[in-house]
Length: 126
Image (cartoon, helix red, strand yellow):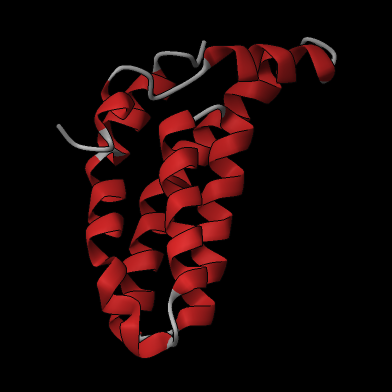
């Protein structure tokens, strides 16, 4: 059993978007645009992590993971948010950029959940 198994049951917390919609005056178009933007940028954000590892660029890796974590939190992508938070901690614990390859399994795990997260979010778009 993987430490990531719980992600298979709950990829998105739809109440996050419901609460955001209420805070923004109830306009569903705003939420639809927000979700579409997240869905469009999610693969790019994960690719950015891969590129940072390839370049051994710890600053870019941190910037990419923080972007992924923050955007995932805002859209209710709870699995992506949790995995990004764990990756952020791992990056912070690395002694230097030469050790970035050690976190490749975590980035690959994030990659594993991209398509399913997108599918689940797309079902929330009116």
